[in-house]
Image 1: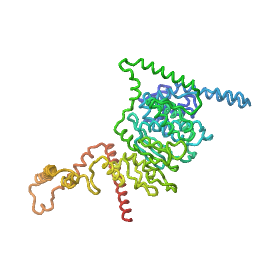
Image 2: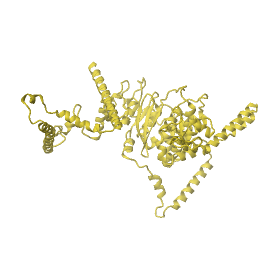
Image 3: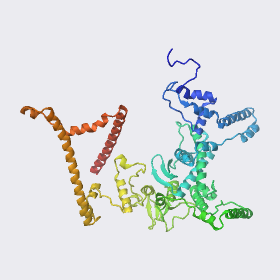
Length: 590
């Protein structure tokens, strides 16, 4: 009998006992495939890849503990109850009993995912780490049209739009936005909250079209979970500002599609302790009751404070500010004391989100705007095409790209290259590290010099490297250091150069001298004719062998990984050289 033989029906071990296929999971849970997918999405259960696939490579495997985790899920029983209830509705419709079917539809069971949010994200930081896909999905469905074919209701689209505007209003109010990049896919944003960097993508404001190669049923299941998650996060963030959630917006601004501006007004007024109420008819008695209740609650809290500090509560409310780091202060004051006016052809929602996040005041063309176009205090007019209307000499007319480039550079860039009618400079991505890629575009160098000028730093001139800045004679000519400092620096540099030269000479003698001694010791008697043919081993070959020694000592897997890294670096260098050659050819053609 073989050593590992196990009779049929005995207990399984290894991967066969730890993993099961999707068909086995469906049979164990007694659900169909659609319901199983919904449960896995809301519970955060994903397929596994066992080292040894017992049933074959064409199966999808799940961990046994994950499936047993689903068996005890209360949501599974709720889904079964809803399925049974739908059968009752279909039976009533089949019997032509419309009144009973209508009554059953009004009483159908519902469920909530609040418990799953608290279960999957024990802390607020955990929820922020998993927010990238959530924000991208919510912003996507906020611009999609409602469709009966894809089971996308108008109510869900409006809810996604509300949640996305609430998130943007908080980011704009706390000045947490860090990077913006406009691409073909959409507009990328990156914010920083609680030390976590959150990146999401918003589509362009154009008509979106449904495609047949996307399963919207799976996307809607993800969206259902993400809506609950974002509502929880918005609730937490708004309460950190002492702002009531959900916010009550001005109905007039909401009807004019100025939701983001209305939310900003609501947060500012609430954080200052003011009450913002929608423009609806309300009796004076209810207002007086609310005021009396607020005064009573304030008196009770005031009574609980120490007697030596009678006004401590008001100081706590007034002085409670979020601790701002240096980067937040820089973002807050980037567009300080600047007023912008948006034309109708520019991306209004994106600019309404970005400009207040960096301290700017913004208005637009239409009703509900904070100020009109003829305001003399406007400093910049954001326009995307030449206008035949009245041009004001007191303001600058720039393209929208100037806003995004200023945000990424953290300085106010010159507007000459962004004037209306001109081809703007390349829009560089802030998510790319040019130093790591090995190629720095020309405009990136220009921005770097402007940033250094804003910080009063010293940078090398075009065509001058950093080693030239280390030369004290050049710094003397530039007026950076005095003559006494230049003499001392020159003396130190000369001494270091002599020591470095002496070290290299000793190293060269050590390499060549040892080789000569070995040859002499091996062949002390050499004839004259043979002396010309024999040669001392090349120093470059010895150095090459010494450099290859660590590679020879590596294991096979590490050597393959090292070769792959070298190949990747070689490809990167080739692409950089190709870009430089292409750039050189363009200059010669011009």
